Structures are given as structure tokens and as C-alpha cells.
Length: 225
Image (cartoon, rainbow, N blue to C red; front, side):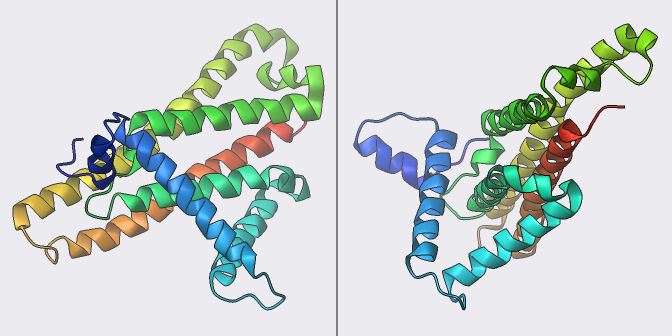
């Protein structure tokens, strides 16, 4: 999807730099999150206020939800889950602003994040079980292991496709609809109801991606039976 005007692209053109838009806007989101984190941590108090209050509400709520799914062992990978959720959420919402692009509307971004989840899932499995992690791929009956192994391999690869295409398709679709409405209506208020719906779906898609990641991590840490 080509956007007619992208602010960061116009800025980079002045310096004769040609970087893919989804990369520059992903960097922009990362810089924005780092800046918000610095602001939230500058004046940490026992009674949260301002940016600290917002971050504690989001991060604390997400952590407690994750612990309910994965148990106390899940706190070990919460930094990844928390970072993943905030990054995807801000990337999704960024495309709702005129002149900006959602990095997650590009399949390269969503594929990279899905691969990170895929690699981390098996890292946790090997870390908790060592060589015995292979039992997760062999099924419950030993003599059916040659049948279960290729099926499990395909299933794990399908997770990457599922995470990639679900997030990419939803965000690209909502950005495309908003852009068409803006071009056809020629005014800001016409697509306003769609923008409220887009904010909701952007939040839901960030939550779904992290929820599935939690479930994959929890499954890799469980003992195979």
C-alpha cells in the first residue's frame, strides 16, 4: 500500500537517504517508546502519577494476565511480551495519523516479529527441558512418532504464518480502508467512526499476537506426556 505523503520520507529525502518506510517508522516507534520510558522513569514515586501511572497500569495488568496463563515461571519472559505488546500497539495506531505509516502494515515487520516468537519459543523449550524437548514433537505413543514428528514440524511452521498474516492482513486492511475514505470524502469527519473502530482493532490485534505468544511459550515449558 502506497501512501501519498509520508513525513519521515520527505525528511529523509532532504538528506538523500532512501530507507524503506516500514523500517523508518519502526525506528520512530522504538525511539518514541524509549522516550516515554525515560519520561516515566525519571520521577518514580511510591504513588504513581502521570506517565508512570499509565505505564504501571498497562504493564502491571498485562503481567498479571500473563501469570494467570503461564504461572509464575512466565515472569521470566515477560520483558519480551511487554515489549512486543507495546511495540505492536504503537505501530498499529501510528498509521491512523495522517502522514504516518503503520510498520505492521508491511509483511516484513510482522514476519520478523513472528520469527522472534518462534525462535524464543524453542529457546525456552530447550532451556527448560534440554534434549528431552524433542518429546514435544513425537506424540503420546512411541510407535507413532514417525507420523507425529513431521506433523508437529508443519504445525510449528504454521504458527509463524498465522502470526504474520493475521497481524499484517488486519492492519493493512484497516489502513487501506481509512485512506480510501479520506480520499473519497475529502474531509476528516467522514471516516471518524471508522477511526474509532480501527483503534479498537489495533488494540485487539496487539493483544492477540502477545496472547498467542504467551500460549506458545507456556506450551514449550510444559512437560511432554
